[in-house]
Amino acid sequence: MSCSSFSLEFPQATQAQLAALMQNILDDDEIDLEACYPTKPVPEFTAAELADCYRLAWQLLASGVSASAARRLVASIAIRCSATPEQATSFKLIRARFKHMRFACTNCSEQHSYPEILHSTTRLMGDFQDAFKHGRRIRTLKLGIKLWYRLQTGFFEVLRKNIADAQTSTIESFQRHLAAENQHLADATQEGAYLTARQFHDLRKIISRRTALNDTRRALYPSPELDALSFYLATINGLMGDMHDDLVLKRIRNELDYDKQLFKLPDEIASRIRTFVMTQQNLHKLCV
Image (cartoon, rainbow, N blue to C red; front, side):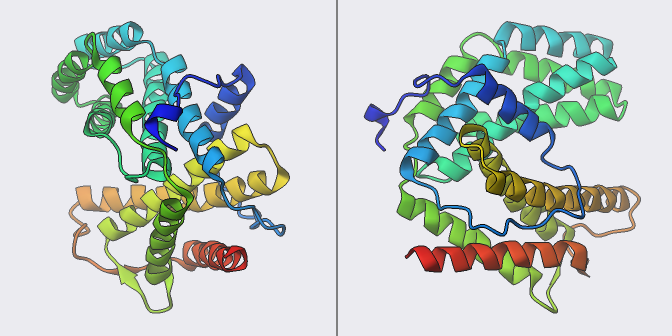
């Protein structure tokens, strides 16, 4: 779909769709060890669905983040060098919308990448959030000032232009992108495979992107199969998130070389990823 025929604003999502997507995002790492991969095949994406998912991600961001309110929140946290529980929650929801838009750019754009302005801002938000969560007062102040300046008047206009200028993916490009990610998952979870913490983190990014993609799709096109797939992916995402938290803690304690020390992926994660990849590959073979 070309830029000239695509609109970020229209058709406009319903409030129910926006609310459903936000709830899906908040639940995207809920662990349910009883969650199973859907028994009924999930249909492959159409080009129209990809465009709809890209649009919904933008509308969730645009409708849920006020530039002036975001600046006031950042300024308040930076001045105090800490965040109240309410402020921390408000900021988490803002960053969640930015992260989801970044996932949508990777999943749904023809470039399968994100604009630098979106990526750098999302990373800055993450660093700022980590600083006030862990009581690093001076770092909170410094990053807060930097983020406050980043969100000055004109930021959202530039961001919107970057997102609007990207073409939505063709089905062929989208399938190649998914196939490459699936192969990466398959290679990392085969018997006897070992990986570093950084490689593990890269794997989790793929799972997080795939979870976000399905969560967006099911907000637009609800079905039991898409729900089941999201619950299954959320379980993998949550298990990997908990494990990565442990890896980061070990790195902080100098108990782990994040880039060099090798370990085997726990079977509760590896087996679920293998099931996901195998089913995805088999479905694609049936559809070509």
